[in-house]
Image (cartoon, rainbow, N blue to C red; front, top):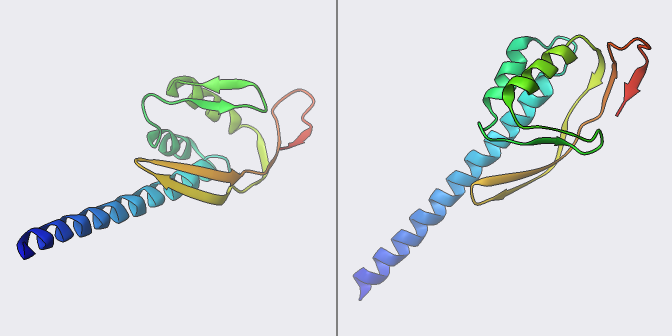
Length: 129
């Protein structure tokens, strides 16, 4: 009886340790993702920053921009638009993580992403969002 309880206790302890390690790993991946997302839209950003960000996305992804009413679902189009966006003059961009919620193999990130830039459009006006 004692051996059975010990084995059960050991299994529960190991599984909770594994869960804690998994949660810590997911938390770290979420932070790396936000850092890469932030790095790809700075005054000194390059194609390498864009490629690093894209490498963190799954092959099957959806990047929805509700405010601007468009969605990306393939890396080729997203990459082309991100490289084109590097032509804009970035004045300020700093993503801040407000809250991370780690679930089973998923992380929900609540963030604030203020940016001020001058688009490469004919009117070249400053846009903040």
